[in-house]
Image (cartoon, rainbow over all chains, first blue to last red):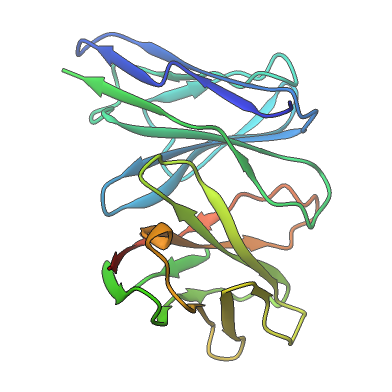
Length: 113
Length: 117
């Protein structure tokens, strides 16, 4: 079955360490997105990519980095520069059809102590 | 930049009753999409309903319907015959028409709906 896989579901890191969140899709979608969810804040856009080897910053890109070397993969690195990294992270993708909705992964809960 | 406002952080409804969740948005565009997403405790994001701004008719999906007021920039969600499974966080979202169709969604902060048996 096609879908978006985010792994792991729960991730724990020590403060000061970089950590990479995985997002893989087998839907053949060009566009992929990373959102961060905090209580009472809704979903906020971190980065998005419309095609391979291209990506744009979202509203809260500081302290994060991404790569898009393959169509299927859009990993997000949370660097030590991110002041409050503990959050729930959602990856999504969309086909180019204008009317198509977002497909979401199941998310990764990152806890940094 | 577009913004989406959900003014009700929490709502509750009795089972089998009707509830309306509010959403307003700010945009200078004339063509766009609006969405309601549901996020149950599993945290999976589920599309509930969507509305194309160029369509005057309000979208409906079974027990879910919207009241789309384009001039007022309002997009409320009505849930009829509420069920226990409707308990979730509900997010209103906006997407620009855009040139490529890949423009990101802008989300509101959400409304947590409780359903009382």
